Image (tube, rainbow over all chains, first blue to last red; front, side):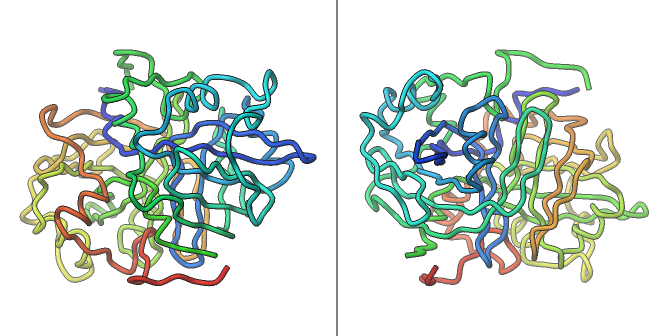
Length: 176
Length: 176
């Protein structure tokens, strides 16, 4: 039996992955950002090929991970998670700074940020796994907790867009 | 500044990754198991090349992820996380069942399990990222919560072996 609910037992966070292309910024919400090796520190992230951010990362070879705080505003999550950068400039009213690598780092609603230079791109079907070296990382707020995906779903009653790596149709199980 | 503490703000779980080789089982603790695409469901895990489990997965092309519960016994974590399968049979006194793929699934101290057939192995230096298709997955205990890495460190006061993808020397920061 393939009971996809069990995949929700894996732990995820809530991150805004941002990149730059021809001095334009864009970003999207992703659950799957994780460290793959400790030294040198390398991080991987799975991004849907249809996202504009995917195009930006492919072109620049750079991305930043802004780690959302538990009390992050649903309005921010809505803008970055459910709207497309093809329709609006997501950074227009979002406080950010340009990081060491040139990628934008979100300063409010976040506990930390990591900037990555891509070393390997792995095609995994609908998504690409961008694996890269940590060039810069810092804690932005020591007092707040990072938001977990479980907290987002259970406490904030957040939804998941179809483009997410962790998207599962409601109450669906499939035969293996 | 590269403040490696910020990487701890990424959210991880606590998993036992197990595999089979010539009808022998072995497993180790890993923090970085995550879904990379939703359909078909694919999972990736980062395993240290020095671990015996790495050798088993490389040979069989199969692994299982047993998702640890928040109240999982530290004795179990000690056995799978800090001992080598070269020195002892970790499954000797561990309740498990052989899953659909032939890999062992741990039945106590867990909330769910996922069995994976490897499709891509990505060399990331000290570790290999094993990316594969979900062949079987099920919830083992609906009542319990999955253990997060943060919970393991802060509530259970657990330590991290040097072989872990998330290992960071205590209080160390490094220049980028």
